[in-house]
Amino acid sequence: MKVVRLHGVGDLRVHEELKPAIRPGEALIRVTAVGVCGSDLHWFSEAAIGDAEIEQPLVLGHEFAGVIEEISGDHRGLNPGQRVAVDPAIPCNDCEFCLEGNPNLCERLHFAGHGLDDGAMQEYLPWPMRCLYPLPESINDADGAMLEPLGVAIHSVDLGNIRSGMTVGVFGCGPIGLLVLQVARAAGATRLIATDKLPHRLDAAREMGATDVFQSTGGDENSEVLVAVNNRGVDVAFEAAGENDAVETAIETVKSGGTVVLIGIPSDDWTAFSSSTARRKGVTIKLCRRMKFTYPRAIKLVESGMVDVRSLATHNYSLDESMEAYLTAQRREGIKVVLELV
Image (cartoon, one colour):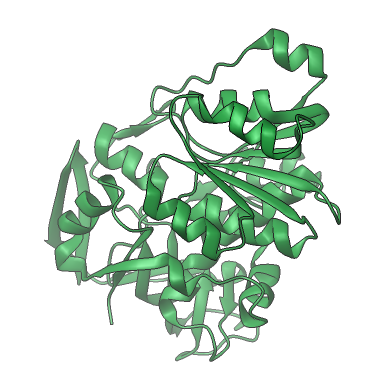
């Protein structure tokens, strides 16, 4: 089968490898669609992400959907030929953090395309059946891959405790930021303010429900955001850019007593902000770590039409075109790059 492995910075290579065997409790997934995530770009650009470094040639890709080819053990209501979205996280379900209801913080977590765990940029991949979610006909394969970033957006909005009538700021309008906008709107936020450096992403933010958009210019936009909300500040600020300018904007524009949710991953593994401003305002700061228990909700949001994931997939490539796909994503062209294996 065809497999794409990352060997080092910017070094993606196509390999021919044996089709993997499956163990009891697993299904063999024929991968049909894989999204290129911002975290994948860290691996591609730096051969690392945060404090994790590449240890061996790694198959990237944790946003994916596919078709069940084969099942071993209890079918758990699943059948060969069934289309599924795949949760890339495999928690142990037994450690302290899993038992506390935080499987995203599992101390023995396996995650597709991270560390020693290969991801979905390959034609076939064995995966636990407990991590598979059947896709309705209205959700195509690329949509199914988008359920993973939507899950991150859902978890982020949960952390923000959005309530009806709130004013929300989303700082960074890549795929996650645009999904946060939509989920926050579905949760009842009525004023949605968005910033980004790229005009085409601000256009997308408007289409996704932003009521006010401002181009990021290194912090000059902060005063514009505050003027738009009568200097009160936003109730909840979501930083989805992975850059300190966006973090500072979130701290500067959130109201006193408000909440800032940090989603982005900084390339240098450091986040900084004005502590005096955050302290004076009594800001609550939360950090998003992937997601938890979100796939059923994500499927319902897409199926109902409350969240549009399809419009975000602006570039499509084959597995053989993986290098071009990653370079396109690295240049921040369009919104979302998806590899399709069908």
